[in-house]
Image (cartoon, rainbow, N blue to C red; front, side, top):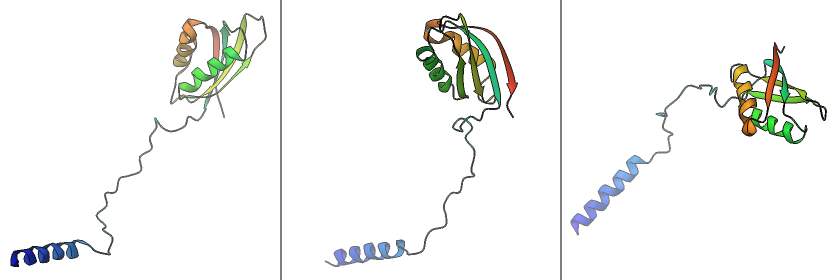
Length: 127
């Protein structure tokens, strides 16, 4: 019986001394580090590119927009499209710290089982 009381007393003492109403200040502090991979792209360049193989603005344009968005470097894609025109023009706003001109062209020309080909393109800085 003495051992039971002694064990109970030790347990209560341990609980009483380990609990405290004071907040511990031993928290680990880590510096705020910007995660560039997770940061949203900010367009600083605009590419205008000829695109062949588009049969409609809604379907083909939607596929291209989706593919460009998936790059995580393109912020906007728009088209100068006319039915039956062989060469249409895409305007693509992008963040050149996230994606290069060459990567955009590669994405365009390899999507939809190589449906689209590209012609000339120009790139200008956005202000």
